[in-house]
Length: 314
Length: 177
Image: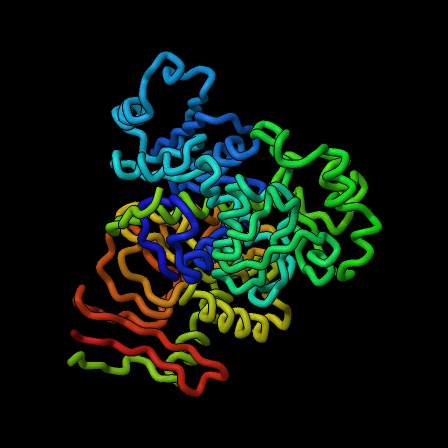
């Protein structure tokens, strides 16, 4: 058990021991979500602000439920309604929230380093809910939790992350978390979206999908991010599906106990066959359930974190 | 160099738990209504021993669960987050007499948190408290129904309860700084 951080900003700076502490704590919080009374008073009287400068539904709702199940009060601050559109800077917005005596700020922003910036600027606890293409630490923690719950351990597993990796914060955070916990990570997708530079993070890069998933225990699919500039990256969605989509024929050539994950939202018929997404090998909905428990654990842990935290990166 | 004194050895612990079990039997006529809940971590093994004693007396199994109170503590945010251990209460507590079990009773704050946590699982008919050692220094109006040993202490002293399997090495040690 070791956790003395005031913020959760990224996975890169966490130790394997700290990641394991989050996963162990989340296990207890998952049990809370399964009771008739799904609420504990751990954060009673605390105020959490969901500062979502980039749109998100599932992450925001997951943090909302997590805060509520810890008895905290939570308010949502979204880009549409915000004064950021009226020209206010992120720093001013955040300091206004702090002036409201917010205890936690959960931030989603399109700029890498936004969470680190707030952590340096404010006295509140800061939790990164996704910053540009940098990191999405709670997603990686919930993915690791889901894998550990189903496979018992993470060390020694083969995890293949398949899809649009270049600008994926989910991929980056997952690579850090999984390699720290001892998994062997393989990345696969079109060469334009999966450059070999990722090998520097300690994973294997291949552009042959069947080879990439053959020995995988976990196949982690990522959506093609249409909202980012994708037209120049590969010819067409149809070609992507043909070359990299997970279909029954490809799945049949993997280990019989390989499991499929996806952080959502799923584009059925593009990166994954509809039938596979709904099969017993799909952990997609378990990931959603576990997300609440992991976010409860993160808020619970950083609440007690007082230690000086060197904020690097961002 | 801290000085340690054994205040209960394995025989003493066994006797104390046997006596508590008989007191529970005396106070509670209907065995079917009794469940034990040990408080993580130290109370769990004490509760298991008591459950074993009670099932021998009643010749029927006595349900025994474990409760972690860390999510209900009143000092969260004032210290590093505590390690949370599993809460396993695989039975309904509503309408039952729940005997909360802990190893050492000190400020009483853990028991306050335990009663709050327990009521999230149902509405017990009554809650009783059994502890192996009561060391005094209460900060809340809480009193144990069953006490293995009353041990006056100074606030600086520590009490270590070591329960082992199969039990020959059991001891309760008072450590003076």
